[in-house]
Length: 233
Image (cartoon, rainbow, N blue to C red; front, top):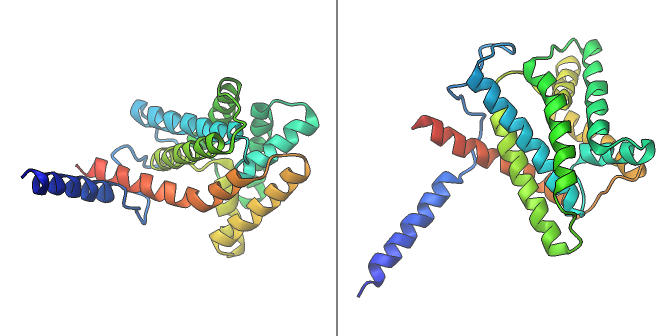
């Protein structure tokens, strides 16, 4: 007797989930979006810091999945292994070096650019020191998926603050603006270079790397969609 009502409730729940998880095609405009890269407010800085910290946490889950890192962390891990630096310090120095490449491209950093360098490296190292390293494939994949989800949410939070791109994204857009080459192609070339170099230095490439490449775009798009619907209400 109660089946039609239960089926209707399940269908409504399913439709609601599909609605909330529908990917967004653009970056949403949020109430906390800055008018320029140094337009600071307590709320904006708090959301930016949360996003960057979540980004570092997500990268740490990928590292501790032990099945492969994102391209830039493969590079950082390779540098770490060859120099004896911790992963956090390697990430920090790579970010500073990439930021210096902005000079000939005439890109200007924002508050978010500088905070990106500090917070992600700090949280990445703190989280790697505390999150247990996985040795099984199933647990490794679960950790990698958690990491990809965290990075997607994190990217949405810090991008919507409008306080400047991270060093790596700024390098990509700077080359695009100066060369006219499509952003996607610039990003592909840069990430292939750092991935191959990092792999040759000993950074871990594997299934996690492939999952990151395949799913990070959708993770960001879904996060943008959720945030757009939340801030619209």
